[in-house]
Image 1 (cartoon, rainbow, N blue to C red):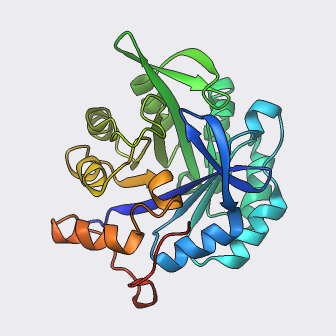
Image 2: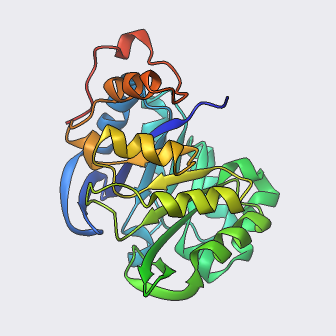
Length: 263
């Protein structure tokens, strides 16, 4: 059975990791590189770095930051934010990123997915989707959740897959930062309708929340921020607990067995 992945998400603004609730009220948590190094030591399977202000402010993700991250960690990491062309993706991949994530730009120009996938391969392309449930309909948003679109979550996810996305990273903006649990039923439906991996994001508050989204929610990976950033659930403890309940996870490296998440 394929191991489920545990992925800390580091929302980055001006080189610092930040966190808020529903993408608002952001406050600095720590240095992006230092925290990535600590998470790698603690046993994270992958990392996701999202420059949350890049698409809103029209800036590219800083290539220099990606280079520093690549030098400091030995696990795969994805970078998103401000990627609007295949050349933008090329700069980040050349700087050391293992995958790139596109969101607002893919909605503005869906052909961007296929153009990057044809050039580099689907395995390098993660399509991130931020959506809110409005009157029973999951509506996609752009620009850090500040703009509603006409797109519906499930149809857009299917289109992204058809265009060459290798993974879908779905964040429920209704759950993000609340620590009230993931939108499990939504992930279960996405996993049923898609053939590519689904990464769950938004709402982790406990080990049980993560266990549910990886089992009932059928997600391939659980992404979280607050519970890791503030040391609520150390990654080694999380992995041991998941393994004890039968969830397949990669074992924690010996050096990380007694570690704690970055504070």
